[in-house]
Amino acid sequence: MIKVQNITKRFGDFPALHGIDLEIQDGEFVALLGPSGSGKTTLLRIIAGLEFQDTGEVFFNGNDVSRLKVADRQVGFVFQQYALFRHMTVAENVAFGLTVKKRRERPSKAAIRERADELLRLVQLDGLGKRYPGQLSGGQRQRVALARALAIEPKLLLLDEPFGALDAKVRKDLRRWLRDLHKQMGLTSIFVTHDQEEALELADRVVVMDHGKIEQVGTPEEIYMNPQTPFVSHFVGETNRVAGEGGEVHFRPHDVDVVEEGGELVLVDNVFRKGGAWRVEGMLVETDLLVEFDVDAALPQPAAGDRLRIVPRRSRLFNPA
Ligand SMILES: Nc1ncnc2c1ncn2[C@@H]1O[C@H](COP(=O)(O)OP(=O)(O)OP(=O)(O)O)[C@@H](O)[C@H]1O
Image (cartoon, rainbow, N blue to C red; front, side, top):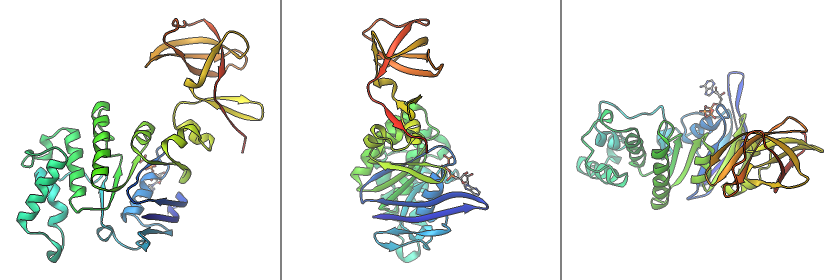
Protein backbone atom coordinates (compact mmCIF):
# COMPACT_ATOMS: atom_id res chain seq x y z
CA MET A 1 0.00 0.00 0.00
CA ILE A 2 2.81 2.41 0.86
CA LYS A 3 6.04 2.49 -1.02
CA VAL A 4 8.93 4.72 -0.11
CA GLN A 5 11.63 4.79 -2.75
CA ASN A 6 15.15 6.09 -2.41
CA ILE A 7 14.25 8.93 -0.06
CA THR A 8 16.99 11.32 0.94
CA LYS A 9 16.70 14.40 3.10
CA ARG A 10 19.27 16.93 4.27
CA PHE A 11 18.88 19.69 6.80
CA GLY A 12 21.56 22.13 5.65
CA ASP A 13 24.73 20.04 5.58
CA PHE A 14 23.30 17.35 7.78
CA PRO A 15 22.09 14.19 6.01
CA ALA A 16 19.01 13.13 8.02
CA LEU A 17 17.96 10.33 5.66
CA HIS A 18 19.91 8.61 2.95
CA GLY A 19 18.46 6.24 0.43
CA ILE A 20 15.44 4.93 2.34
CA ASP A 21 13.47 2.14 0.60
CA LEU A 22 10.48 0.66 2.35
CA GLU A 23 7.23 -1.10 1.47
CA ILE A 24 4.30 -1.41 3.82
CA GLN A 25 1.32 -3.66 3.12
CA ASP A 26 -2.32 -2.88 3.64
CA GLY A 27 -3.34 -3.54 7.24
CA GLU A 28 0.18 -3.74 8.62
CA PHE A 29 1.21 -2.26 11.93
CA VAL A 30 4.80 -1.06 11.49
CA ALA A 31 7.22 0.40 14.03
CA LEU A 32 10.07 2.73 13.12
CA LEU A 33 12.58 2.00 15.87
CA GLY A 34 15.90 3.71 16.45
CA PRO A 35 17.89 5.94 18.75
CA SER A 36 17.38 9.68 19.01
CA GLY A 37 18.37 11.44 15.80
CA SER A 38 18.24 8.34 13.60
CA GLY A 39 15.67 9.93 11.26
CA LYS A 40 12.45 8.18 12.33
CA THR A 41 10.38 11.31 12.74
CA THR A 42 11.71 12.82 9.53
CA LEU A 43 10.68 9.70 7.60
CA LEU A 44 7.23 9.70 9.20
CA ARG A 45 6.76 13.41 8.42
CA ILE A 46 7.73 12.80 4.81
CA ILE A 47 5.17 9.99 4.54
CA ALA A 48 2.57 12.31 6.08
CA GLY A 49 3.39 15.19 3.73
CA LEU A 50 4.46 17.47 6.59
CA GLU A 51 8.00 17.50 5.26
CA PHE A 52 9.32 17.08 1.73
CA GLN A 53 12.18 14.86 0.64
CA ASP A 54 15.10 16.09 -1.46
CA THR A 55 15.06 13.04 -3.73
CA GLY A 56 12.93 9.92 -4.06
CA GLU A 57 9.21 9.21 -4.15
CA VAL A 58 6.37 8.22 -1.88
CA PHE A 59 3.56 6.10 -3.35
CA PHE A 60 0.17 5.35 -1.82
CA ASN A 61 -1.57 2.47 -3.62
CA GLY A 62 0.64 2.99 -6.63
CA ASN A 63 -0.02 6.74 -6.88
CA ASP A 64 2.89 9.11 -6.52
CA VAL A 65 1.91 11.43 -3.64
CA SER A 66 5.37 12.97 -3.31
CA ARG A 67 4.13 16.42 -4.14
CA LEU A 68 0.77 16.26 -2.35
CA LYS A 69 0.31 18.31 0.78
CA VAL A 70 -0.73 16.75 4.06
CA ALA A 71 -4.39 17.72 3.67
CA ASP A 72 -4.58 15.85 0.36
CA ARG A 73 -3.05 12.58 1.57
CA GLN A 74 -5.93 11.36 3.74
CA VAL A 75 -3.69 10.36 6.61
CA GLY A 76 -4.50 10.57 10.27
CA PHE A 77 -1.62 11.51 12.50
CA VAL A 78 -0.78 11.94 16.13
CA PHE A 79 2.38 13.98 16.51
CA GLN A 80 3.56 15.34 19.80
CA GLN A 81 3.86 18.84 18.46
CA TYR A 82 0.22 18.77 17.38
CA ALA A 83 -1.12 18.74 20.91
CA LEU A 84 -4.80 19.24 21.63
CA PHE A 85 -6.32 22.70 21.34
CA ARG A 86 -6.63 23.84 24.94
CA HIS A 87 -9.43 26.31 24.33
CA MET A 88 -11.65 23.71 22.64
CA THR A 89 -13.67 21.04 24.38
CA VAL A 90 -12.78 17.41 23.90
CA ALA A 91 -15.66 16.97 21.44
CA GLU A 92 -14.59 20.07 19.47
CA ASN A 93 -11.04 18.75 19.33
CA VAL A 94 -12.23 15.42 17.98
CA ALA A 95 -14.46 17.10 15.41
CA PHE A 96 -11.79 19.55 14.29
CA GLY A 97 -10.70 17.68 11.16
CA LEU A 98 -14.29 17.57 9.95
CA THR A 99 -15.18 21.19 10.73
CA VAL A 100 -12.26 22.51 8.66
CA LYS A 101 -13.23 20.53 5.56
CA LYS A 102 -14.24 22.43 2.45
CA ARG A 103 -17.94 23.24 2.52
CA ARG A 104 -18.99 20.71 -0.08
CA GLU A 105 -17.18 17.87 1.72
CA ARG A 106 -18.17 18.92 5.20
CA PRO A 107 -20.81 16.87 7.01
CA SER A 108 -23.74 18.67 8.65
CA LYS A 109 -23.34 19.97 12.19
CA ALA A 110 -25.52 17.18 13.53
CA ALA A 111 -23.55 14.54 11.64
CA ILE A 112 -20.28 15.95 12.97
CA ARG A 113 -21.59 15.89 16.53
CA GLU A 114 -22.72 12.31 16.09
CA ARG A 115 -19.37 11.29 14.63
CA ALA A 116 -17.49 12.90 17.53
CA ASP A 117 -19.66 11.04 20.04
CA GLU A 118 -19.09 7.80 18.19
CA LEU A 119 -15.31 8.32 18.24
CA LEU A 120 -15.32 9.18 21.92
CA ARG A 121 -17.13 5.92 22.59
CA LEU A 122 -14.54 4.14 20.48
CA VAL A 123 -11.67 5.53 22.56
CA GLN A 124 -13.67 4.84 25.72
CA LEU A 125 -14.16 8.45 26.69
CA ASP A 126 -17.91 8.76 26.25
CA GLY A 127 -19.39 11.39 28.48
CA LEU A 128 -16.21 13.48 28.56
CA GLY A 129 -16.93 15.47 25.38
CA LYS A 130 -17.70 18.69 27.23
CA ARG A 131 -14.48 18.75 29.23
CA TYR A 132 -11.39 20.69 28.26
CA PRO A 133 -8.02 19.00 27.68
CA GLY A 134 -6.71 20.48 30.94
CA GLN A 135 -9.30 18.43 32.81
CA LEU A 136 -8.05 15.08 31.49
CA SER A 137 -5.27 12.70 32.45
CA GLY A 138 -2.32 12.20 30.11
CA GLY A 139 -3.64 8.86 28.88
CA GLN A 140 -7.08 10.33 28.23
CA ARG A 141 -5.52 13.19 26.27
CA GLN A 142 -3.62 10.74 24.09
CA ARG A 143 -6.85 8.92 23.35
CA VAL A 144 -8.52 12.21 22.41
CA ALA A 145 -5.62 12.90 20.04
CA LEU A 146 -6.20 9.48 18.49
CA ALA A 147 -9.93 10.07 18.16
CA ARG A 148 -9.16 13.38 16.44
CA ALA A 149 -6.80 11.64 14.01
CA LEU A 150 -9.43 9.01 13.24
CA ALA A 151 -12.23 11.52 12.61
CA ILE A 152 -11.35 11.96 8.95
CA GLU A 153 -11.55 8.18 8.49
CA PRO A 154 -7.97 7.76 7.35
CA LYS A 155 -6.73 4.51 5.91
CA LEU A 156 -3.26 5.33 7.13
CA LEU A 157 -2.53 6.28 10.72
CA LEU A 158 0.85 7.80 11.61
CA LEU A 159 1.91 8.06 15.23
CA ASP A 160 5.03 9.72 16.60
CA GLU A 161 5.90 8.40 20.05
CA PRO A 162 2.20 8.17 20.83
CA PHE A 163 2.69 7.17 24.45
CA GLY A 164 5.94 8.98 25.08
CA ALA A 165 5.13 10.92 28.19
CA LEU A 166 2.96 8.37 29.98
CA ASP A 167 3.82 6.12 32.89
CA ALA A 168 4.61 2.46 32.29
CA LYS A 169 1.27 0.98 33.33
CA VAL A 170 -0.82 3.41 31.25
CA ARG A 171 1.50 2.87 28.29
CA LYS A 172 0.98 -0.85 28.45
CA ASP A 173 -2.80 -0.56 28.58
CA LEU A 174 -2.88 1.96 25.74
CA ARG A 175 -0.62 -0.18 23.58
CA ARG A 176 -2.92 -3.15 23.80
CA TRP A 177 -5.89 -0.93 23.19
CA LEU A 178 -4.25 0.67 20.13
CA ARG A 179 -3.48 -2.76 18.68
CA ASP A 180 -7.11 -3.76 18.98
CA LEU A 181 -8.27 -0.49 17.47
CA HIS A 182 -5.88 -0.89 14.55
CA LYS A 183 -7.35 -4.33 13.78
CA GLN A 184 -10.94 -3.39 14.39
CA MET A 185 -10.77 -0.39 12.02
CA GLY A 186 -8.72 -2.11 9.35
CA LEU A 187 -6.06 0.59 9.49
CA THR A 188 -2.55 0.62 8.18
CA SER A 189 -0.46 2.17 10.95
CA ILE A 190 3.12 3.36 11.29
CA PHE A 191 4.46 4.50 14.62
CA VAL A 192 7.76 5.92 15.74
CA THR A 193 9.34 4.78 18.96
CA HIS A 194 12.74 4.53 20.57
CA ASP A 195 11.35 1.95 23.00
CA GLN A 196 12.23 -1.49 21.71
CA GLU A 197 9.79 -3.22 24.01
CA GLU A 198 6.98 -1.14 22.57
CA ALA A 199 8.07 -1.95 19.01
CA LEU A 200 8.40 -5.68 19.65
CA GLU A 201 5.12 -5.91 21.48
CA LEU A 202 2.96 -3.91 19.09
CA ALA A 203 4.26 -4.15 15.57
CA ASP A 204 3.78 -6.75 12.84
CA ARG A 205 7.06 -5.54 11.42
CA VAL A 206 9.85 -3.44 12.85
CA VAL A 207 12.06 -1.09 10.84
CA VAL A 208 15.29 -0.50 12.76
CA MET A 209 17.00 2.77 11.85
CA ASP A 210 20.35 4.30 12.69
CA HIS A 211 22.06 7.39 11.30
CA GLY A 212 19.44 8.01 8.62
CA LYS A 213 19.60 4.47 7.25
CA ILE A 214 17.53 1.33 7.63
CA GLU A 215 19.57 -1.33 9.41
CA GLN A 216 17.01 -4.13 9.24
CA VAL A 217 13.33 -4.74 8.51
CA GLY A 218 11.64 -7.81 9.94
CA THR A 219 9.05 -9.28 12.26
CA PRO A 220 9.78 -8.75 15.95
CA GLU A 221 10.86 -12.38 16.10
CA GLU A 222 13.31 -12.01 13.21
CA ILE A 223 14.73 -8.80 14.59
CA TYR A 224 15.23 -10.27 18.05
CA MET A 225 16.43 -13.74 17.11
CA ASN A 226 18.34 -12.93 13.94
CA PRO A 227 19.77 -9.45 14.10
CA GLN A 228 21.67 -8.83 10.88
CA THR A 229 24.04 -6.18 12.15
CA PRO A 230 25.91 -5.51 15.40
CA PHE A 231 23.85 -2.36 15.79
CA VAL A 232 20.53 -4.23 15.70
CA SER A 233 21.85 -6.93 18.02
CA HIS A 234 22.92 -4.32 20.54
CA PHE A 235 19.97 -1.96 20.20
CA VAL A 236 17.18 -4.52 20.33
CA GLY A 237 17.16 -6.61 23.48
CA GLU A 238 19.99 -6.95 25.95
CA THR A 239 23.27 -8.16 24.53
CA ASN A 240 26.71 -9.04 25.83
CA ARG A 241 29.54 -8.19 23.48
CA VAL A 242 32.85 -9.93 23.87
CA ALA A 243 35.84 -10.28 21.60
CA GLY A 244 35.99 -13.67 19.94
CA GLU A 245 38.24 -15.30 17.39
CA GLY A 246 37.64 -13.41 14.16
CA GLY A 247 35.13 -10.85 15.38
CA GLU A 248 32.72 -9.72 18.02
CA VAL A 249 30.58 -12.34 19.75
CA HIS A 250 27.11 -11.28 20.90
CA PHE A 251 24.89 -13.25 23.27
CA ARG A 252 21.76 -12.55 25.29
CA PRO A 253 21.79 -12.73 29.11
CA HIS A 254 19.10 -15.44 29.03
CA ASP A 255 21.09 -17.57 26.57
CA VAL A 256 23.77 -18.54 29.08
CA ASP A 257 24.39 -21.80 30.94
CA VAL A 258 26.36 -22.04 34.17
CA VAL A 259 28.63 -25.10 33.98
CA GLU A 260 30.84 -27.04 36.38
CA GLU A 261 33.90 -27.19 34.18
CA GLY A 262 35.23 -25.38 31.15
CA GLY A 263 33.52 -22.28 29.80
CA GLU A 264 34.61 -18.82 30.83
CA LEU A 265 35.27 -17.88 34.41
CA VAL A 266 33.25 -14.95 35.75
CA LEU A 267 33.82 -13.06 38.98
CA VAL A 268 30.37 -12.12 40.28
CA ASP A 269 29.95 -8.48 41.16
CA ASN A 270 26.23 -7.98 41.71
CA VAL A 271 23.09 -10.14 41.75
CA PHE A 272 19.44 -9.16 41.73
CA ARG A 273 16.12 -10.74 40.93
CA LYS A 274 14.85 -10.21 37.42
CA GLY A 275 11.48 -11.86 36.81
CA GLY A 276 11.93 -15.60 37.24
CA ALA A 277 15.73 -15.49 37.29
CA TRP A 278 18.75 -14.18 39.14
CA ARG A 279 20.43 -11.55 37.04
CA VAL A 280 24.16 -11.77 37.58
CA GLU A 281 26.53 -8.94 36.69
CA GLY A 282 30.14 -9.84 36.66
CA MET A 283 33.52 -9.68 34.98
CA LEU A 284 35.16 -12.20 32.69
CA VAL A 285 38.33 -13.02 34.60
CA GLU A 286 40.42 -13.54 31.51
CA THR A 287 39.54 -10.30 29.70
CA ASP A 288 38.08 -7.96 32.36
CA LEU A 289 34.98 -7.54 30.16
CA LEU A 290 31.64 -6.99 31.89
CA VAL A 291 28.90 -9.54 31.26
CA GLU A 292 25.33 -10.06 32.42
CA PHE A 293 23.49 -13.35 32.50
CA ASP A 294 20.51 -15.05 34.09
CA VAL A 295 20.59 -17.99 36.48
CA ASP A 296 17.43 -19.98 37.19
CA ALA A 297 15.86 -18.58 40.38
CA ALA A 298 15.16 -22.14 41.55
CA LEU A 299 18.94 -22.40 42.14
CA PRO A 300 20.61 -20.76 45.14
CA GLN A 301 21.18 -17.03 44.69
CA PRO A 302 24.78 -16.37 43.66
CA ALA A 303 26.64 -13.79 45.74
CA ALA A 304 29.18 -11.09 44.99
CA GLY A 305 32.65 -12.61 44.98
CA ASP A 306 31.47 -16.02 43.69
CA ARG A 307 33.23 -17.50 40.71
CA LEU A 308 30.99 -19.06 38.07
CA ARG A 309 31.78 -20.72 34.78
CA ILE A 310 29.53 -19.78 31.89
CA VAL A 311 28.89 -20.92 28.33
CA PRO A 312 26.58 -19.08 25.93
CA ARG A 313 23.92 -21.43 24.57
CA ARG A 314 23.34 -19.24 21.54
CA SER A 315 25.59 -16.57 20.19
CA ARG A 316 26.22 -14.59 17.04
CA LEU A 317 29.54 -13.67 15.54
CA PHE A 318 29.90 -10.35 13.75
CA ASN A 319 32.97 -9.91 11.65
CA PRO A 320 34.68 -6.55 11.62
CA ALA A 321 33.48 -4.40 8.71
N1 LIG B 1 14.03 20.99 10.79
C1 LIG B 1 15.25 20.51 11.04
N2 LIG B 1 16.35 21.28 10.86
C2 LIG B 1 17.58 20.80 11.08
N3 LIG B 1 17.84 19.54 11.50
C3 LIG B 1 16.82 18.74 11.69
C4 LIG B 1 15.47 19.18 11.48
N4 LIG B 1 14.65 18.13 11.75
C5 LIG B 1 15.45 17.11 12.13
N5 LIG B 1 16.75 17.46 12.07
C6 LIG B 1 17.89 16.58 12.38
O1 LIG B 1 17.78 15.40 11.63
C7 LIG B 1 18.12 14.25 12.42
C8 LIG B 1 16.98 13.27 12.42
O2 LIG B 1 15.92 13.83 13.16
P1 LIG B 1 14.60 13.02 13.50
O3 LIG B 1 13.71 13.91 14.30
O4 LIG B 1 14.06 12.44 12.28
O5 LIG B 1 15.18 11.87 14.43
P2 LIG B 1 14.42 10.83 15.33
O6 LIG B 1 15.00 9.52 15.02
O7 LIG B 1 12.96 10.99 15.19
O8 LIG B 1 14.88 11.28 16.78
P3 LIG B 1 14.02 11.43 18.13
O9 LIG B 1 13.76 10.04 18.61
O10 LIG B 1 14.98 12.18 19.02
O11 LIG B 1 12.79 12.21 17.80
C9 LIG B 1 18.47 14.79 13.79
O12 LIG B 1 19.87 14.84 13.89
C10 LIG B 1 17.88 16.16 13.83
O13 LIG B 1 18.64 17.02 14.64
